[in-house]
Structure formats: C-alpha cells, structure tokens
Amino acid sequence: MSLLAPDENNIIKAADLIKSGGLVAFPTETVYGLGANAFDPIAVSKIFETKQRPFFDPLIVHISSFAMLSRVTENFGVLEQKLADAFWPGPLTLILPKKREIPDIVTAGLSTVAVRMPSNEIAIKLISRAETPVAAPSANPFGRISPTKAEHVLKQLGNNIEIILDGGNCERGIESTILKIENGIPYVLRHGAVTAEEIEREAGIKVIKKIEEAASNPETPGQLLSHYSPQTPLVFINDIDLNHIDKKNAGFLAFRKHSVMPEFKKIEILSESGDLHEAAANLFSCLHKLDDEGLDIIYTEKVPEQGLGSAIMDRLKRASKKGK
Ligand code: TXA
Ligand code: MG
Image (cartoon, rainbow, N blue to C red):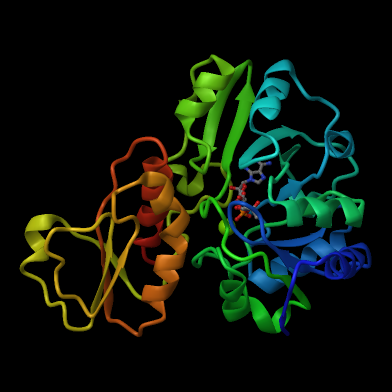
C-alpha cells in the first residue's frame, strides 16, 4: 500500500472505491478519516474491522453540501442552521435525528446521527465525487493516537487500507467539536477544534459542557476514559518534579519553550510561544514522534484549560489513562 497524491485522477479512483464498497483514508482539516459509503452497512463494517473498533462506538457522517444533508436527517432546526451557517464547512459535528435509511451500524443503534461538513478541499471533492455521505472515524487503531499526517495512517493501518490520499499535515490537528442540541440548549459532548466560547459567540446562547466523566455516558458513546494513547506510558508532570526524575530514557512533551530546557532523551514542544492553536495542530504529531522513540516513559506538561486548551487537555488526560 502506498500514499496517493490527491490529484483529480486519484480522487476519482478513491471515490470509485467508496462507491464500490471499499475504504479510503483521506485528510480532513482535523485528523485523517477512514471513510466508507454511509449507506452501505457491509462497507461500514470493514471500518470497524480495520480499526478493531467496538460496535457501540458510532461514526460521524461527512457531507459535502447542504443538499446532501437531507439524505441523512429530516429535521434541521433553526439553531442547527445558525450553527451550520457559522461553522460549516468546518470542525463542528452536530448530533441530529437520523433518517431511517442510515444503517444502525453507523449510529450504534441510536436514533441520532453525528454529521459534519469538513472544510478540507480534498475531503469535499472525495465526498462529492463519491456522490454519497461518507461515514468516517479517525484513521487510527481504536484507542490509539489520531493521525494528522498520511504517514501516521500508513504506519498504523497501512496494510489494511487500499487507498490513502496524502493531503499533508492536517491544519487543525484535533478532532471536531461534537454538539447536541436539546430543547434549544447546546451541549458539548466532545471538546474539539471549535471552542465553546466561539459557539457561544456565534449562537448567542450559553453552551453546556457535558463531557469529562463520559466514561460510560450513553450521551457520548465511544468517549472512553482511555483514548488517544501512545504505547509508551504518558504521565503528567509539574515544574517541581521535573528536577527530580530520571530523564535517561524518558521523553518530554512541553507546552512551550522553557528558558532552560531539561535534558530528556527526546523533547517535543507543542508551541514555542505557547500558542494554543499551534499546540493543538502539533499535539498528535508530537505524540507520534515521542512514541516512535522506544522510550520507557513520556512526561507531559499541562496546558491552560481555556479555549482550545480544553480540547488538548481532554486528549492528554485520556492518553495518560491505562487500559480501555
Ligand atoms: O474531526 C473529526 O470528528 C474526525 C474526522 C475524521 O472527521 N472524526 C472523528 O471520528 O473524530 P471518531 O470516530 O474518532 O469519533 C466520533 C465520535 C464517537 O466516538 C462518538 O463519541 C461520537 O462521535 N458520536 C458519533 N455518533 C454519535 C451520536 N449519534 N450521538 C453522540 N455521539 C456520537
Ligand atoms: Mg477517534
């Protein structure tokens, strides 16, 4: 299996593969997705098989236009429209009542379906050429680090995927924000690339965060406590302990550049200036690099839990938890 340049011919080839029931890994502005025709339950079952993903964890359906939206949901409210106008195409996923035609395997039997319109041009072209909504989780083995480069997909799942479209680095680097609206109130089910503050500004309405303890929360199936995990143990560290630990075969994930950097075997810096957008874009890539070093342990700093920092800390906390 090799990476394909996302030119017109290869996108058509990839779209044809989706039409004929195959899987395609493709870039989005958040992370790479592993896509199949959302209306083809056999094709979708291959996603679960390839990722070793449990069937209780529903998928996000990706559309390339508002015309496609009517194929997945019957009911798009005023607030949903306002949010879609503000954030689509882009990294906001809305939970909507599903149409009967969406197979249960996509939604894990729920009566709702998660939908988003990505802004990445390659993703949009692929979906529109495939002429069908595309169900796609992140293109990584279940529970492991999400891919933000085509090489991450190749490394983790390459043997089992026929086509990987190489769109370079994902611009945002962190998954979409998942929002569910109930009785006119938006609930964030997963922190992501769009911040709660941005949603509040656009929608002019208070957003409720309903996540953190979502280990077995049926509202957020699949948001398991342990997720996004490197194979190397990941542990939070504070400035004081930093001076007293064994750094010989250890790695360090720094939020920003320190005036004196500690002497770890391998260091990755999320953003030299401490910019949260840059940190989010680099997060998974830095984790992949540290995990590839054969270290005994990776220590990580905390980032401020505001704006995008909430999404970054959500990923780091889950990545530091053992077991599934
Ligand atoms: O940025 C993203 O959202 C990426 C790219 C590829 O679009 N996709 C992604 O998919 O992160 P995945 O499968 O890794 O995460 C999807 C999560 C599920 O684990 C589940 O928590 C939530 O979406 N979800 C899906 N359908 C849902 C539903 N009907 N109700 C509540 N949560 C749902
Ligand atoms: Mg994922």
